Amino acid sequence: MDSERLLQTLLRAARFGPAPAGDAPEGFDERVMRAVRRGRRDQALEAWASGLWRAALSSAGIAGLMGGAAMFLAVLGDAAAFPDRDDSPGMMADESSIDELLIHDLESGDLL
Image (cartoon, rainbow, N blue to C red):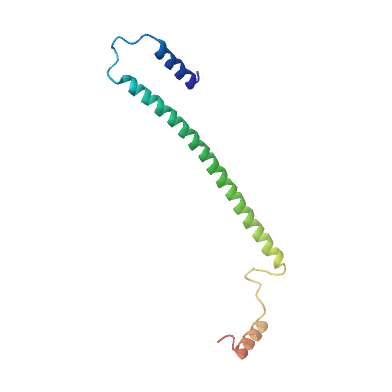
C-alpha cells in the first residue's frame, strides 16, 4: 500500500473515529503528528539526495570520457604536427651536426 494513502486513511480514522477512553499518555497525539511530519521531510530529502548522487556519478563519468578523449586527441595532434620526429633513444643526430650547432652558438654568444 502507498505510504501517503495509508497516512490519509489513518488520519481520517483518527478524525472521525471515537475518542480514546484515556488509554493514550499525555502528549501522544503531538508526538505522533511530529513523527509524521518528520517522515515526510525525510522522504523529500532522500529523493533530493538520490538525484544529486545520480547527477554526480554521471558528471564524473562524462568528465572521465572527455579527459580521455582530450589526451587521445593531444597525442594524435602531436603526431600529426611532427610526422618526421622519432623519439626513440637510439636515433640521435649525428655528432658532426651537434658540433656545428655548438660552435655556432658559442660564436654567437647564445650559449654563455
